[in-house]
Length: 103
Image 1 (tube, rainbow, N blue to C red):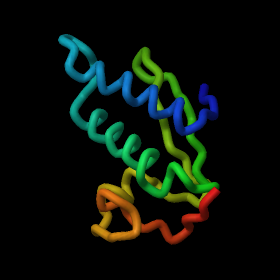
Image 2: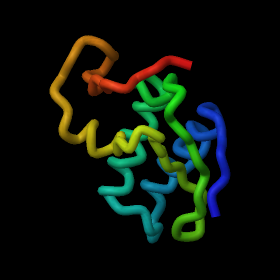
Image 3: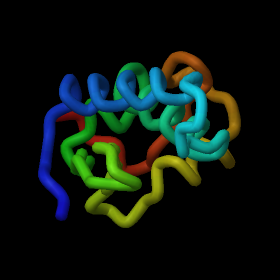
């Protein structure tokens, strides 16, 4: 079950998940940590946190809350960020989204 949330709540959930990464015997793998870091960066300083097409949802995954980014234009923000070329449009080398439309 998913629930729509705002950017500040999503960042709080992601920060809590970052704290789990260093705990002993926690099921939080390196790839999941990298994906969550990308989600956090996209929400904080990238195009996704300021786009009207982005839907931010809270989901229940492995016994904890998690955040998923859903683009109504059919893009996968994490894949775009993995495969991006560095540009100057957004800080930290965020990808350029051709459908970006500010709220």
